[in-house]
Image 1 (cartoon, helix red, strand yellow):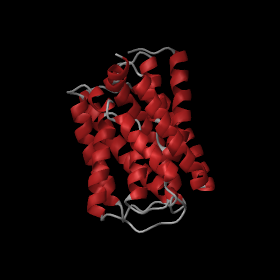
Image 2: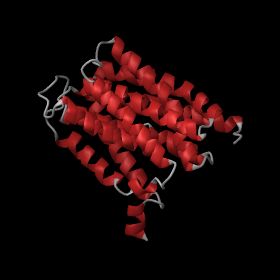
Image 3: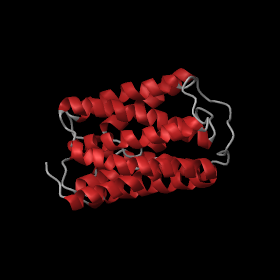
Image 4: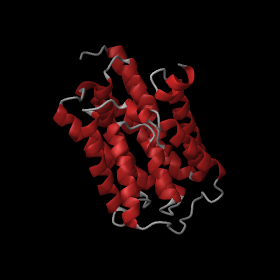
Length: 259
């Protein structure tokens, strides 16, 4: 598929904005996937190309968080591995079924996430007691990894919620660990999609430049402002993604409500 220079520039700008938002709160796929679809790229190829550009952005964010000491890969290697394995399964299934199966469930889940961040009084910059062990945490992250490989948008918010609500991490450390899990699931999904021949390399690599720049900006903003910035963005991105899905005429809930 050949894209015009104007389309490439549009996709790169979308990736830059998405990379910045994704590094702070997740939900960058809300911008990049619709942008790829608007460029006329078929759904499976759009998901595959999105994985390519997102890999670069999340890796850059991982490096930024790790350098500041906010990431603990030794303790949380289990969830990262689980995210990778889950994403392989999701990306494999995506190439064989209609991804709209999950689309009907997403708005309700994202509303729950937005409500959690809105009304929870305990979100802050200090760690709390974990509610589940590392094995249960890994299992839950693996489920989100499956979703990330299968569909993608909102996975960052789901990862962050799990690390916060169940892992007991501070909002900044939860965001940092989310980037590690997100990078693992992006790489796994990408490799599976490459094997299936669905990646548009020129579009993906061009978008990667914007994603890297945006990821660096977003991660530094998150480390500077902490929960003051991250919490509102998590709420906004969850509600924005919910709205986007509900107004999509192809979403099962939209069809059910409006015919």
